[in-house]
Each structure stands twice: as C-alpha cells, then as structure tokens.
Length: 341
Ligand SMILES: NC(=O)c1ccc[n+]([C@@H]2O[C@H](COP(=O)([O-])OP(=O)(O)OC[C@H]3O[C@@H](n4cnc5c(N)ncnc54)[C@H](OP(=O)(O)O)[C@@H]3O)[C@@H](O)[C@H]2O)c1
Image 1 (cartoon, rainbow, N blue to C red):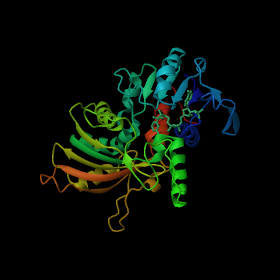
Image 2: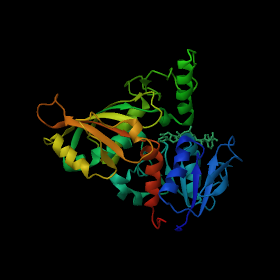
Image 3: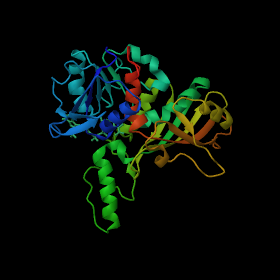
Image 4: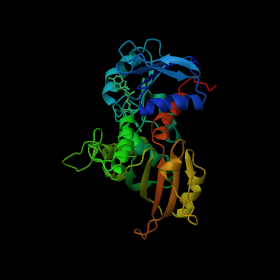
C-alpha cells in the first residue's frame, strides 16, 4: 500500500462522513487522492478537502478500482452490498456499520484495546458500536489489571448517533415545541423535544432487549475476548444533540477501590478524568463534543456491593469521533505501510 493511499469515503455526506474528512485533516492523515461517495441524491455536489474541490460520486460497484482504503459509513445494507466488491478490487475496508462486527473473520477493533487484531484482517476491519466504544476504552485498562466479571451500563445517547437527519429533527422539533406547535416525528419513533425514549433500534419480543443493547453485550465479549463477562445494558435516546453518556457499574474478580480505578484511568490512553467532587463537575456531552477522549468521572465505590469488588462511574464521549470517525481513522493509520504526514 502506498504512503499516499487513494482513500474512498462511502457515506461522505452523512454525520460520520463529514467527521472522517475533518479527522483525516486534523490528524494529518496522508491521502494521495480522495474519492467522495454517497447516494445518487448527492452525486455532483461538491465538498472541499485540503483546499481542493472534490465532486461527490454515486457509490457503485466500479467505485473501488484503484482505491487503497475505503471508510464505509452508509449503513449496514450498503456495507453488505459493496464491502466485498471493494475487497475484491484490493481495497482495505474499515466499516462503521454493524454488518460484519460479529463475523469471526473480521477483526472488531478499538485501537486502545486490541490494535494487535488489525493484522488478522482479510480485507475488512469493523469499527465497533459507538456505545460499546464509549464504555470499553476506560474499562479495558481496569479489566487488564483486575478482570471485570459483571458490567451494568445505562446509556444516554445523543441524536447524532442516529445520523444527520435525527440531529435536524431534534433541532426542528425543539423549535416547534417552543413555538407551541405540534411536530410529528419523521425520523425518530417518538417526540424528541423535551423527551427521551428507549433506543430506536428493533426490540426482540422474546428477550426484551433492543438491537443496540445486544450489540453492546456481544461486542464487549468479542473485543475483550472474554465470552464469560456478564453484561446488562439499557440503551436510551436522550434529547442531546451530540455525544453519548453512560452510567457504568462494574464488578471485578478481586476487590478494587475507587482510588485504584482513578489511578489506572489517569494514565490510560484515550481517557480524560473529569472528576471534580468539590466543583460538582463531571463528564457532560457538551464537553465531550468535538474532542477524541472518553471523559470519565463520578468514580465511586458501588455501595450496593459491600464486598468492595464494584465501582461506579459516569462517562461521556463524542460518538461521531471516538465512536465512529476517529476510531476508524486510527485503525486506518495502523494499516501496514501507512505513514503520518
Ligand atoms: N452516527 C454515529 O454516531 C455512528 C456511529 C457509529 C457508526 N455509525 C454508522 O455509520 C453509518 C452512517 O451513519 P451516519 O450517522 O453518518 O448516517 P447519516 O448521517 O444518515 O448518513 C448516511 C450516509 O449514507 C449515505 N447513503 C445512504 N444511502 C446510500 C446509498 N444507497 N448509496 C450510497 N450512499 C448512501 C448518505 O448519502 P446521501 O446524503 O447521498 O443520502 C449519507 O452520506 C451507519 O451504518 C451507522 O450505523 C454511525
């Protein structure tokens, strides 16, 4: 692969697509040529990359000839249809959708956790679910020191996790609400302004878990390579424009103190402690937005576990960045023969 690879972005006009461009630019990711791909609706529109005007093309089976790396974020149906075509053309695909995450032949990678798995790829590397990434970046260094045997997560997920149209719906429905008008939801299943609701993915009538929750459970086990880790999770969509938050309680095999957790996390890659009890200042989506770390705070002993094995904390991360575009670009940077500018 060239040091100045030809890079394609499939889904370039979306919420994640826009962040791919910004992230590559910010990190000095070397690009020989950029191919901007989206649906026929966007074909012919223009965008700017490093001072150059790039014409958006319709994503087709011919889009990947001569492409070294493709970053996919156009939904799992598009990934299922086009990723194998891209691989046959010699392209390495970093896929943001859920299409291949649980495929045993596809590495599921958070660079701070399992960058070593990138070398196993057979053409496709999957980017994990954004709620999973947000939890697992800070949990991994703890798990390595003192195995986490049980994990309970409650999410507070932003509109941006459902794409550009959902962000627009939150803004428009909030304005309508303040004008005293009724706003019939178009993208979300329920009124979004001044409301929250169970995550908008399909719910399994048997288990009562929605798809987002199932992804967090399965992906945690795959990424940690620990089939026995017990995960309970409740995913909720909240009227926050950008950046997910999560309340996390974990139980370790050996006793663990909040001080130990704070010390481990103080030096952990991709983590920033925001844990000011005096100022009552803790992770907030507004502070997480636009930056790449998972903010971690409210670190405290779980008083419901008198054995001292459990700790609770609250985290926030920009899921368009660390939960999607940044994580994918970090993976692309680690592909063989890649170099930074
Ligand atoms: N949002 C997040 O935080 C997040 C996090 C992790 C993973 N992801 C995943 O990333 C993907 C995109 O998410 P998003 O939030 O960026 O969604 P989005 O804002 O709705 O953008 C969707 C993108 O897909 C393109 N697209 C739709 N149909 C297409 C088609 N038939 N052919 C080619 N391109 C097509 C759209 O192009 P047009 O503008 O031309 O329609 C647009 O660029 C999803 O798989 C999502 O699950 C998202």
